[in-house]
Length: 373
Image 1 (cartoon, rainbow, N blue to C red):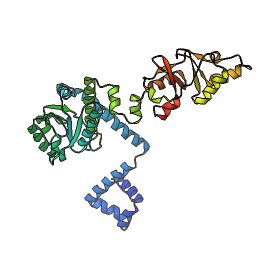
Image 2: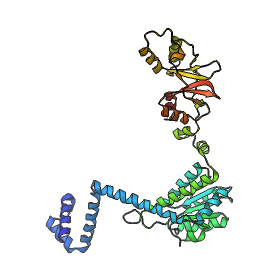
Image 3: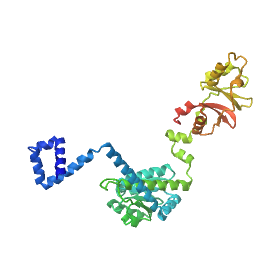
Image 4: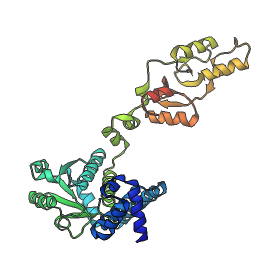
């Protein structure tokens, strides 16, 4: 009782509005202790006030509890990778139609994400909201499609209406949720179990662990389908042509080549070397033989080192100061491979060849402009 009285006094101190409601603090306290309903309400309010005044260590502890709780729920999914999961992967991968995903509430949002992941990894998919399905959107389902319905409880009214309609169409029905005794689990052909023991929500109500489990199960499904179909980097690039990610997967060295092709012969004078470097503004010039093969490279750094070393360079030529056997790359290589080569050898330019014959040069700034770096 003393603790409760102290808590109430602190609340009254911070909330002057409550003091105005009663004539005095003492009157307020007396009314609270003689009115059980107000005592309970005020105690609940005190708890909420204390909760909202979490200090930094409380915040960190809460976040860590959530992360660990969800990690535990994800690990528990290993128990549910069973014959139904295998059958679902096999039927979807062998199917000529699309995978139609549906759900209600938070599960609908997860269904949308899984559909997006499947589409970007080679499995044609679309999303159909369970509530909209019974108002005309069922028309998007074709005879050869497979339907995947996601619902934590599996017993929501929308699901109970949707499931018989899908089965009436004759489509294969896959369920995903956390209730093996639900209407959905009993009616579907295969069930992907995403049961969690507890939600991270302090009230064990808001979908947290359960939606994470659904998303992870969806990712497991997508990855299995990718591996089964042999979906590779080239396929991924075809579906992701935009942005830096797409460029890393499809942009080739030949796409970066300009009309500039700085080159000199081995016996070129130092003056000609410097003029060629300056003219093309690539910071280097390739030294090639009579067959067009790269035998060396001279960078502006090589020129500076020459000036430091020699007082008279009239007798010098390109061969005298070039770096022999420089790094080269074929024009059909990916641009990201050129970057990796530059990064590994700490260089800014690469001579580009076409079946061993010099055809141009790329600079690290070319990769920067294209967003490869």
